[in-house]
Image 1: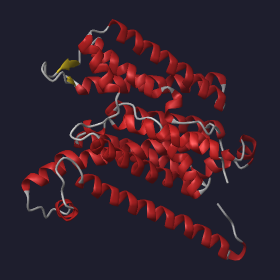
Image 2: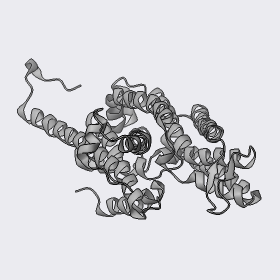
Image 3: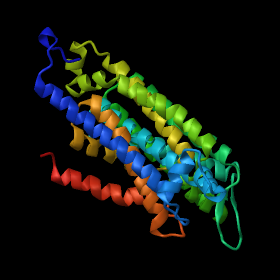
Image 4: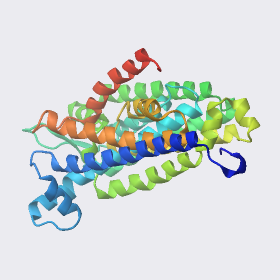
Amino acid sequence: MPHFEDGVIPAEYSAYISRKTLLLIGLVGLSGLLLVTAVSLGAVRIPLADVLRTLLGQADNTRLALIIWNIRLPQALAAILAGMGLAVAGAAMQSILRNPLGSPFTLGVSQAGAFGAAFSVMVLGSGIMQSANAGAVTILNPWLTTACAFAFCLLAALVIVAVARLRGTTPEVMVLAGVALGSLFTAGTMLLQYFADDVQLAAMVFWTFGDTARAGWREIGIMAGVVVPAMVFFIANRWNYNAIDAGDETAHGLGVLVERVRLTGMLAACVLTATVVSFLGIIGFVGLVCPHIARRMIGDDHRFLLPASCLLGGALLLAADTAARLALAPHVLPVSVLTAFLGAPTFLFLLVRGRR
């Protein structure tokens, strides 16, 4: 931690802290505004005043209250939790791996989750056709599908940790292990899809679309039980990540157990990503782009970068989810499609523009 002689904090440092704090407060306000707006917008437009009254328990319209509490609020909270979890995991991994391209999906965890869901649909028969006329596909047993996806996500995390222990916890080893696992699970998914019939193939593809509308209050409770402790864990290690950014040798000199910090951080990122992927499907680019945007806004200090990445990730995914619901109304576009369309150009822009 910074140390100042005689306990006097320079005015410049106080101004530095104040600017960062105000920016974080602004992101909190933005997230709250987006939450109320997301609940308000949809096929049925609900005035903001009615939304606020309903959230405060003063609803005077039972129909609107059902829409808010049973449909829109769970979806909005799922988007916030998923965005916060993926973004903070990406920010931590970019420091742990000392690689600006680090993200939860670099580990191959999302591909492992997709394979688990495909295995459940193909082998265990959890995907069916809901309506022969509409041709809509639904998951017959979502808990079985989610459990299989989560199991393979954790399997990928354990393999990465085991390889890192055998070969040393260098960033290169972890990235290459993630790339290899991603290719392996992608090939497995393609193999299952090759032998699947039309209904099974449609169910597999449907599940891989990232969709926050799948989450109910029970799923949100489970996600919050994983996302919140993981965020606390990453923020508690903020000084360790600052030290690692200066180099492994410097971090060792400061008393940081680099290998332990790297392993525990990677495992926490894997569990966090596995939870989001297993409930909502694959949502790309949030964990990669948001930390870079937050770094441009607030700097490299992880005391502020990690909270800013959390807030920005939640706000960005919530805004994308709201736009996806409205873009092709009454049809609902999966949010993963929109994040991919927006994330790839945004990341390319950041790469081309460079740091000022």
